[in-house]
Length: 74
Image (cartoon, rainbow, N blue to C red; front, side, top):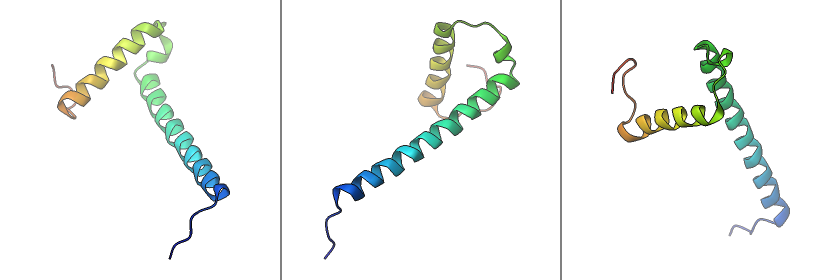
């Protein structure tokens, strides 16, 4: 029979998951930062609210219809 994990074991698991989450988010952030820099967006003065709207649109395109071929027009 399997014993119940102790609170300290659960806390350790939670901390490991938090660290894993931080690592995944950092990798995703680096990926998007590289793409933005490659596209020259880092050099432009684009207001945050406009960037938010643009990324929402991009996210919506990929969520709604799945991945589309590069260069496809909507």
